[in-house]
Image (tube, rainbow, N blue to C red; front, top):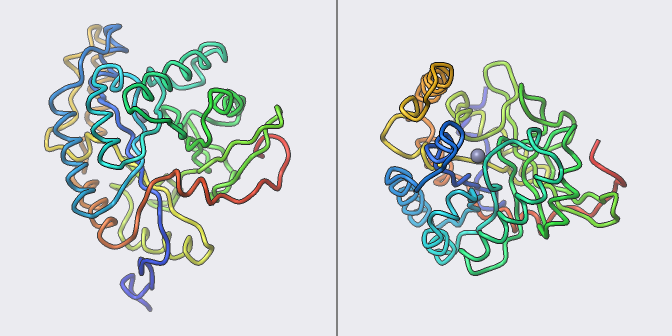
Length: 305
Ligand SMILES: [Zn+2]
């Protein structure tokens, strides 16, 4: 039997997509529990320094999907990341999933998020990723709104059904979709892999479940099919501090929920940056904007299946 090391991938032939969902979870949870996001934490800032240093060392540019809360609090950081050559894209305004919003509120958040980010970055923003990958079957209308707001591509669809999100059967190839308006938007879906008996997106906390062998296989299959893999991570996954949010919650119910999330998040957490660094050393990565540019031309009419 061939070992994982024999699988001929990562020879520099293909360029894959690396995305960082640039959010400070303490800001998000502070907004949720206390009604105010407040400043970004020094921990977040330090973790982003680690991310930027790691990318510089690997001579890699990535797409930073920046939360509107971060962009509003620290436009100077956004400008710095843009000046380093990373692609600045939007991760929405408040980090609430689309399914909690009316189309009207979603449209307002989209345009505000884009404006804030473009002012901070000093350049146009083409990409969008919904908080909690919340473009799913019942929120596909959001793709119209994302295009109307002026985004050229979206990267919010996990092409497998998860508990809260995902569009099963969407496929993992970037493609252009003709919208009802007649306009088109490029969708750059997340890559999924099989791990622990289920299919999971390749990134974030799921990287704790995925072996390097499985990742090599996924890359081999993508490269054979002329596709790029699309990986995601969060800044706090590169830090040394454990995930901690119980102090932000006020009621016992929120405290219990925050404690449960912390417990789940901290389990095997150190594996995540190890795997990302390994991937950066073995495969070639670049920004999602380039993958969107190379997406296949539309073959289907109407919204995705
Ligand atoms: Zn997020």
